Length: 433
Ligand code: ATP
View 1 (spheres, rainbow, N blue to C red):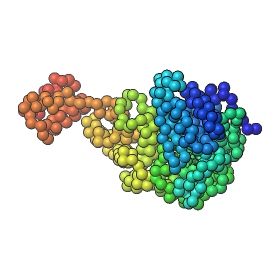
View 2: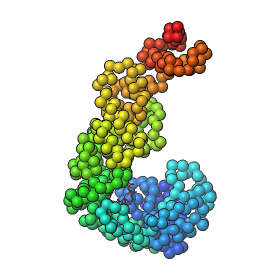
View 3: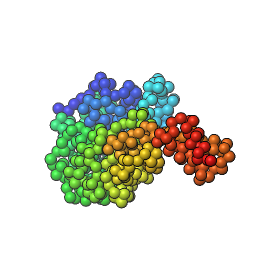
View 4: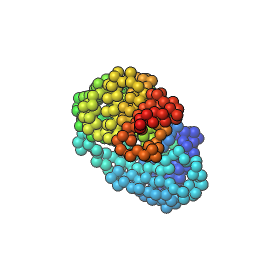
């Protein structure tokens, strides 16, 4: 039987600020007589009794009208995207004052909400982005990927808490099945095959047999023509999951990697757990933790590939240059590792310093070579105590010889040839005699 949700239930699984926003949106939608729903992944996660961090709202009618009404009452800012019929409302200080919510309560939450007009989508050609038209909630759910993502929870008036579930998503959730909504689904949008593998891996669900049968030649053929950016995005999302290895293996078993790029069949499928860095490893030049996880995931995965394969793959998937460089560097470090093992700390350091530190970290996770750890934790921070200014004070002119002296002093510290400032001074005197 279709489920009904209560306020108590929602309060248990939504952040208090989200609950406040939900009430506000509900009241405004009711004033305008607009049916409004929570849809997609947030309904799925609510039904699995998982805490939800954000939610997608669909309005049967004009999302812009609703966003404008909310803006008038609660301030903030609204941005419209007319092609998709969406409006993003960003809360600001005025909004928080009017809502009587202290700003510090929301430090971890992105303080914005997306409103989407219910829409239908038609695919004029396989694999291209669809044509979009305002429509009903039925059509809006029909354009979605899987039954478990095609449920809507209505919020307005007497309908509050009613689940709208035209594709029996609730039953599939209970049975643990990933099921597409129609036979052309993967041909319309082959990235859904990657999404199916991701959800199956995340929830330990099965891909339902008919759906599995639709992962066929035709769908793989369209997959091979999908833009690199869209494919990369789907794989990025796998690297944000706790066990990307199983998902990547599943892609290989389903013959979904060769259509993306043939070299991927030779990638590394035994990824270590994507450890979040402990502070002992120090700074890595990656903007945030998700970017870090994704980059690390790609670098670990592609490490066994040749530089040539990494280059062609990088073009196919439109890698940012930082990712291409990190993958190259990890691959060449892995190859050079046997030749480096007898090196002195200074030789390791001067070589590793030329590489992005995330590449060194990735090879360390794969091979556990102690020198790589030492480099990351300690060697890369060791400098001579003598500086350029000290050399100038001794009457030396800046130039190649200058750099060479500093380099040798640093090597002496790294290799333990000098251990005190006294010893360093003696060495400097010897070098400058
Ligand atoms: P996640 O927990 O992975 O973020 P989500 O369901 O919130 O899951 P989104 O990628 O944010 O995933 O997409 C939101 C919703 O949009 C999905 O639940 C699904 O209904 C729909 N959707 C997303 N991508 C597609 C697609 N390629 N084809 C059809 N529907 C899609």
